[in-house]
Image (cartoon, rainbow, N blue to C red; front, side):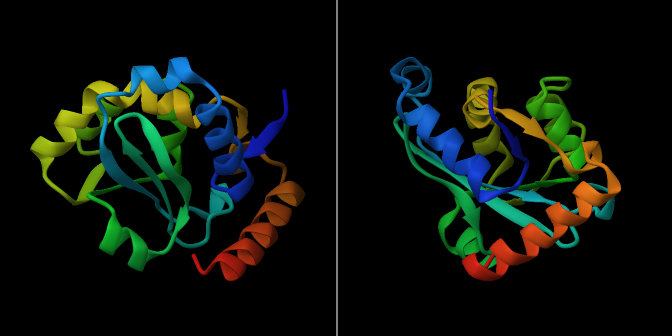
Length: 164
């Protein structure tokens, strides 16, 4: 299995490809229509020097977008914007913690949208996590110092190129 680095275009592109080719995964989310953005808060220990956002836009289980987005795009197009530290997202994506629990405990902050709306999407959280983790992920805090510097340099380059 190929390993992808967290919060990179390659990770999101491959996850989207795997999801779109998996009719069973799409069927599990056929009742989900929501445009969600996820803010990963800056944390130098993860090689993330400034907040970064990615989106998962679904329409009746069809994945319309899974990509890094700008602050402006998130504000204008996402129904929900949820923010957390990289360690919180890591634990959710590694299935060490549950989205709903962290949301209710305030570890995930709602920046845009209604709490009631997020709780309506919450029953789909495990399937959304599955759609984001069909590949092996490596997180910035798992990297050596040299690897983290390469990650940081790569992130600066793709952020500039993508305008995110």
